Amino acid sequence: MSGKHEAFIQQLERFHQGDERQKPNRKALAELRRSLGFELGTYIPAYSYVESFHPSNFDRPMYYLVAGLYALHPQHTQAEESFGQTLVKVQKEKEQISESLEKRFLALLNCQEENQLAHHLRQMIGIVKQAEVNLNYVKLLRDLIKWNSDDRYIQRHWAQDYYQGLSPQKPSSDENAVETLDV
Image 1 (cartoon, rainbow, N blue to C red):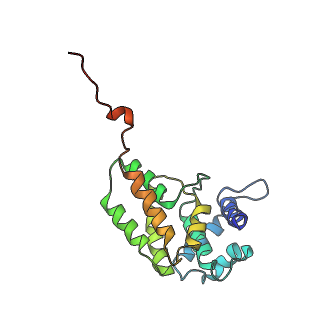
Image 2 (tube, rainbow, N blue to C red):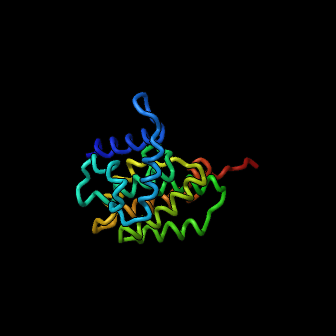
Image 3 (tube, rainbow, N blue to C red):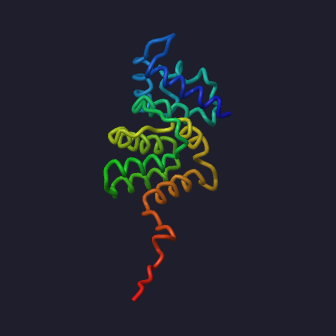
């Protein structure tokens, strides 16, 4: 299953960068960006870029969402990072903790409807782009496909990664050792 997701993101990367067989496809990226303004998976000009990957009816909206988000910020990384970890990098780029970013993140985690999720993710990707932080779109696609699971484990995982990444590192046992003074 992950091979299909990776192939999809590789195709998006070819639209952005091109390869030895084809030039970058700016039209494809423009259509995919434009598709974010519509209900996920309903913008017909984007069909030719997504439907060839045969997403199931269940996965289909998330393929369109990730394609549009990639078109907004086409900077993919292979690093196996959750979106929560990506936002920690954004915070570190800002060199301060942003309460507004945290509020947006919490609103994102609370999303249950696809269009609401798309709206909040679009905002967050804009912030990630502004901070010039790369994103693992394969991981994002995998996570979004599982977004509506009953136990909301993706949301918990992102929150854990985010808050653990922001918390100050615990001192090692050597740093806690009390020096004794010879008097």
